[in-house]
Length: 333
Image (cartoon, rainbow, N blue to C red; front, side, top):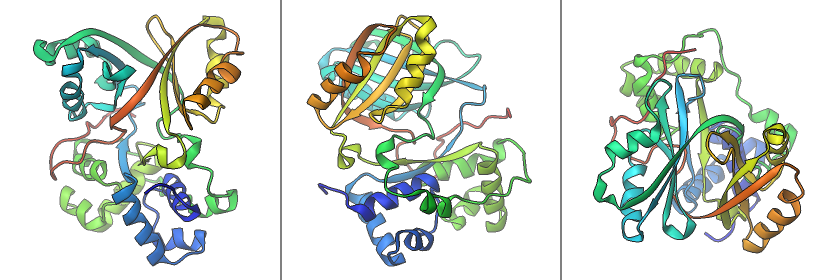
């Protein structure tokens, strides 16, 4: 697949609004048949890496996301990156900087030891790691359930409103261990049928449907859409590590979050206190962004640009056998 047309983009945008929207409703909004939506969806899954994943909202205070950077000898990078991608506590595992650096987000309980200490204990010495740095994520300005604007341009406000789900918020219980089976299935396929959810939990289909709606309504579970961004025109990705004057940090971060090129903007601990991910049409476009949009912002003292060569893992767990543990639940509100 070399290009996405208006229907493809409309389906992706619709799934971003409601990852479990029926094909019939998407078809009505796009003014195409249900069969067309189903056929396009299958093609997007096969050729564009499209996947809807249901994820636990980890920003309730029970976990601390750590952004970890590992520099390695070239011969060890691929194996180590794949090993990190298969861990249930990681997301967004990327190869950067010419293939000599690995970037990953590690999700840890708030009271656990720092992520770099955990990795140094768990990753074997023979892996060829030459450097480790870990940065606690302090605040997200753009990212998580908020999508890169490249996948949210297809539908107008009227169409968006027709797709927004109506959820019952009467059950306000936070996630518990009883929900783990539900989370495991949704992590593999956010559009899994009620029969699969019922089988994984031992509940009836009606109970599984009500519990999922309640978790969505309270914000405990959200749906993310994974797709190859290059097919949407973003052929060059880069992580931007910035050191910003503290008095200017909030203003710079808010400004970046408003830029169409941005997919992630977050403040962190460490010598660089702001990280962002830029998606551009090519390296010339990235150069223009850095010099004409980022450059004029006051308060940025230093900038490191790390091109992303490959993304091994996105927000959801890697596909695996049914019943394997994928997400941890939180008992907090």
